[in-house]
Length: 138
Image (cartoon, rainbow, N blue to C red; front, side, top):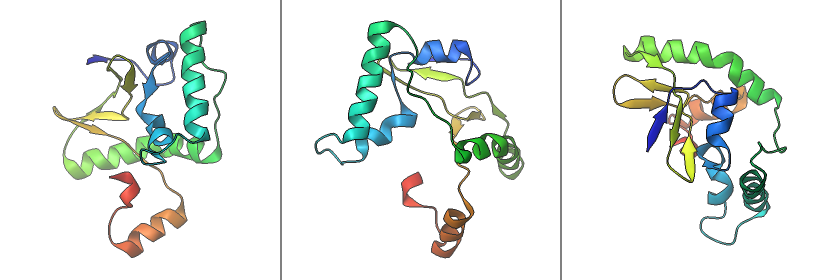
C-alpha cells in the first residue's frame, strides 16, 4: 500500500484513481451479500474496465444535493472532531492498494483516519432515536 498526499477532486487525485475500484463504491459489490452482482455492480465494473481500456476518467459521474451539502459541512465536522477528540486531522490523500484504493476524508493523528458523513435530518433523527449509530456506517 502506498499513500499519496494529494487533495481530493484534483487532476492528480483523478489520475491515481483511474482504473481502480475505490472504497466509495464498495457498496455496489457488497449490496447483494456475496450473491450475483446487481446492476449497480455491473455498471461500476464496466466503468472501471472502460477506464483501464481508454486510460481516461469515466464519463459516469454525478453530483446531487446531498453530496453538495456534505462538501459544505465537511470542514465544520472535521473541526468539531478535532476539538472533541483533541487530535489534528490532516489531508486524507489517496491510499493506493494496487487494483483498489481509498481516499479518506482525513488522517486523524498518527494512526487513524476519518470518514465524514453528512446525513439528512431524518437520518440524524433516526440515529438519535436508536441511541446508536446506523449499522450501515460501522
